Amino acid sequence: MQAADIPAGMVLKEAAGWNQTEQDWANLLALEPEGCWVEEHQGEVVASTTAVCYGRELAWIGMVLVRPDFRRRGLGRGLVEHGLAWLEQRGVRQVKLDATENGLPLYEKLGFHQEGTIERWGGAKPRGMCVYGVHELELGSIAALDREAVGVDRSRLLEKLIKAFPGQCAWEPKEGFVLGRPGSEAYFLGPCSASDAETAGFLILQLTLRAAAKVFYWDLFPDQPAAAETARQLGFERRRGLIRMALRPETSVSGRPERVFAAAGFEYG
Image 1 (cartoon, rainbow, N blue to C red):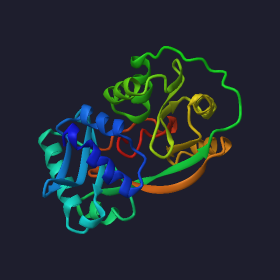
Image 2 (cartoon, rainbow, N blue to C red):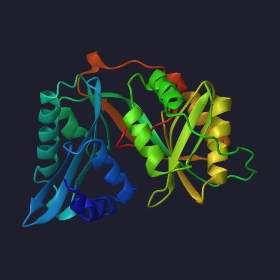
Image 3 (cartoon, helix red, strand yellow):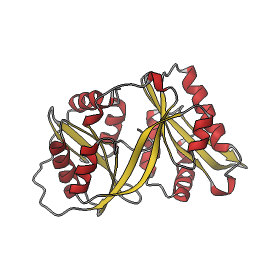
Image 4 (cartoon, rainbow, N blue to C red):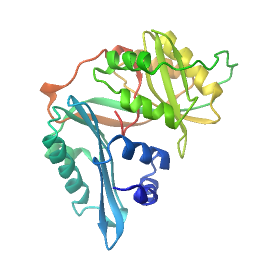
């Protein structure tokens, strides 16, 4: 995939009803320029897949999209298999993704195993007054909090999100942080790591109050009940669920899942 393919990628994601923007595609290309692929037919992009690597410990498959009139031809499977072969050459130990129910049979055939569920919740801007000032971010501090929570170094991703969406964040030193970004349908909240639900709820509330948006999405894990309860308290409701899958469960990285209050997005993990 090249930067010139981004408009075609937007057509694919709009056909699927997803929330990504052109900046999200650009971020993926910047993070992994050799890890984004498209399938062309007569010069037109008809399918896509991306892979983002977090060192050699973990890679994330995302943006598996096929134009509706080209589905059921094996294009998505072919691109994912190409991506897995590329990751194998790079020596990546673990590969994960978030699958829709329609995609589940394909990924199971490719050797992925179900790990759990991730849910997208949605909500409107809550009432209240923003009392949180914009603090200068310390990438190293935020990356350390994130690494402790998820178990891998995602500093490249965090740095890219911070630069691409300046000011879209809230954080408390040593306690937690949340990043946000505009989407085509709703403002996306995440990733968010925090020492406790009170800190996470406060930071997310302040970011929603400050954001220039009326509708918000929040991806969380129902197995982390504090995250779901925090979302309910802020007026969010469950919209859809996906299945988190791992290629080699025995090599899964371990972090502190009780500190993960929001994921980075289905394309990032």
